[in-house]
Length: 462
Image 1: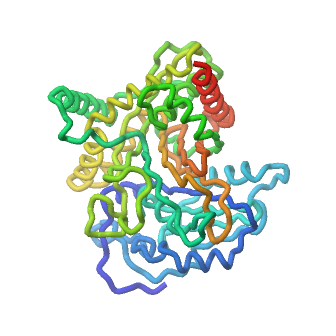
Image 2: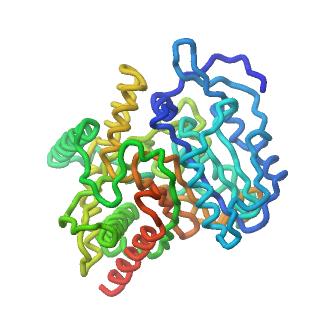
Image 3: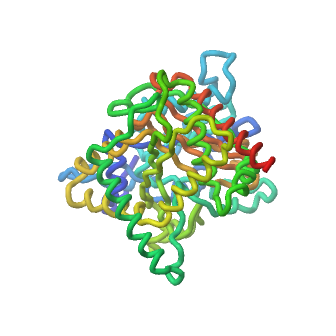
C-alpha cells in the first residue's frame, strides 16, 4: 500500500473522540439480499463506487509526532477490505439466517476492532446467509453520511438507472426549530428556559447525576461484556395508524412511546421488586444537525464549500427520558407523554449545545478529558437509541434485490443499544444487549412489538 504524497489531515473533534479506547465506535450495517452473492461482482462494484473515492475511505489513521490523530492518504487495495465467508457463520445448522447474522454482528460489536494498517472499513460477504455486512469506523462519518453513501451505491428496483430517493426524516428525535419569523415572545422565552434546563441536566449527567438502577441498567466496564442481538420489526403503516391517533405526532413520538411502553412491560416481567410509578429511564440519542433532516444527497455531502451539509460527524446529543408505568388501559398515553417530552426538546438548543461544547472541550482540554465526560454521560444513562428513515421503495445492490437493512454499533457502557432503520414499509429495530444483564433480548423485542400492536388496536377502535 503506497502512500500518496499529501499533507496529513487532522481528525475532527468528533473523529478524535471515536478513536479513543473507551469511546471507540464502529458502525455495522447488514444488508440481506434475495439472490446468492456474487463475490467478484461485489468486489468490482466497490472498486468503481464512490466509497473508494472519498478521502477518508482512502486514508490510514496515523498519529503525528505530537500525538495528534490524522488521516494519511494511501492507495487502497480493495481486496484487503472485501472478506468473503463461504460457509455459515454459525456452528448450529438449526439456527436461522437471521439469528446467525445477528450473532455474528453481536460478536463484531464487542471483540473485533478494525485493523489500523488499512483504511478503517471492511465488507464481509456472508454467502451462506445472503447478507453483506459493512463495517465503518465512526471517525469516517456519522450514520447519515454513511447511509447516504451506501444508498448512492444502490439502485431502485423499478428503475436500475436511478439511485434511491433520499427520504426526508429524522435521525434521532430532534426537528428543526420553528422559523424565526414565527417566534413570539412566549416561544423565545420557552426556548431560553428549556435550553437552560436541559443544558444544566446535561452538565449534571457528566458529573454525578444518574438513573436509578433497574433490570436494564449498565455501567462502567459493561462495554466489555458479551452481547446478544435481537430484532423488533414494526410495520410503518401500523406506526402511522398510531401517529394519527395523537394530534401532530411524528414517527419519532411513536417510537419513543413504544420504547417507554415496551420497557415498562419488560421491567414488569424481570424486576425482582415493584418499581415506583413514573420511574425515569434516560436514553441518549444522536441527532442530525444538518439543515435537511434525514438522508442526504451524496453530491451535497461531498461539496466542501457547504459546511452545513458536508460529509462528517455532524450531530448533537439529546437526553431523552422515558418513564415506567404499570399496564395502562390506554397504551396511547405512552405516545402522548413521549410527544410532550420531545416537543420540549425540539424547542431547545440542547443538541447544538452538546455539539459545540464537545468540540470546544476537545480543542481546549484534549481528547482524554472529553472522553471522560462523554463516558460518564453514557454511564449515567440507561440506553442509546437512533432512528434513520431509509428508502421507501425497494432497491437493489449490485443488481441483487434487498430484503432488509439493519444497523448496530460497537458496545457502550449501556446494557441496551438500539438502532432503527426503515426500508420499504418496515422498520427494523436492532437491540444489542449485554447478555449478563438481558439474557434474551428477544423477550425485550417482543415487548416492543406487543406495545405497537396494543397501540394500533386501541387507535383503530377509537
